[in-house]
Image 1 (cartoon, rainbow, N blue to C red):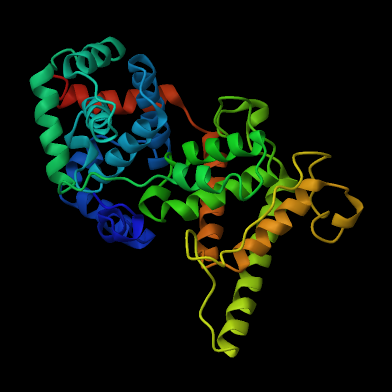
Image 2 (image 1 turned 180 degrees about the horizontal axis):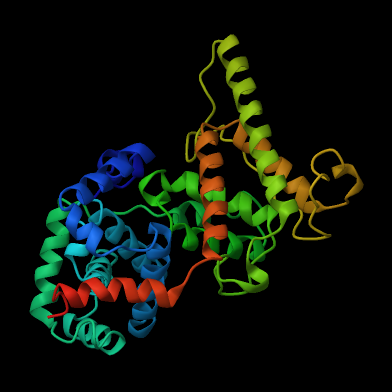
Length: 356
């Protein structure tokens, strides 16, 4: 087992560029264009939302902890970069991924219980499936993932840095919710977990916190729809990027090395606990030019976080892209149609006899 992300198979084999990911998926569809044309599917983000909902439903019935749920979702994403979705029964893949993830995360579930609960959730879609089918699917998953099953998650970075960054309980919960939501995007296949975790921290600082236990994309008052918060996030990232470049230039001129990255040797910049959610969220146009008019301790904390990142080796461009991807996802989530997505998936399962 790779004890750190930098030596892991996740970093070496399971991080791609957006172009590489698109090319892999297109190649799968090009192998059988008639199948693709016969069974159109919703856009990928809607499929991801649906899979997330289903795996959470099954996980709740089994009492599975969040770490295993997250690992299972990564397995599904990896698997479907190698296998065209219309060739599989997604419900069986979901159940198998969770079963395998529970083994890897040291909270194993009995195979009979997993099959029983899965058939209870999806009686029509899995009526012909039994433990032998799930066992076969498990070997299929392991083979397609080349037995590379260790997954490093952003939760570890969040919990490690929570005190250093002085996050309040609401901010930590908000960041945790953003991390939960990122599994409904391609980000686990695009960026290292620490970049995602720090992006989640920034969004939790500048956006209204979600309700207890909820996801940021869960709708209602918890949804990150504050235009002022998004403007602050964009401006903060732009400032961070400029400050990081200036810091690197100063270090180079002085003959020193670069900044100290996450988890590096002594000298890593730190933040002392300061401020909390207070005051009103700045509105568009108030950041940064009108910030001095707002006695908001949260703004001070964001500025300190910005300075901390500027002196590190964190990929700021990656954080910018993660932020844009998450904002785009939240907008897409508003147009999600659960019934339509379910019907399109069930249609190819029935037509191709994948439920037997």
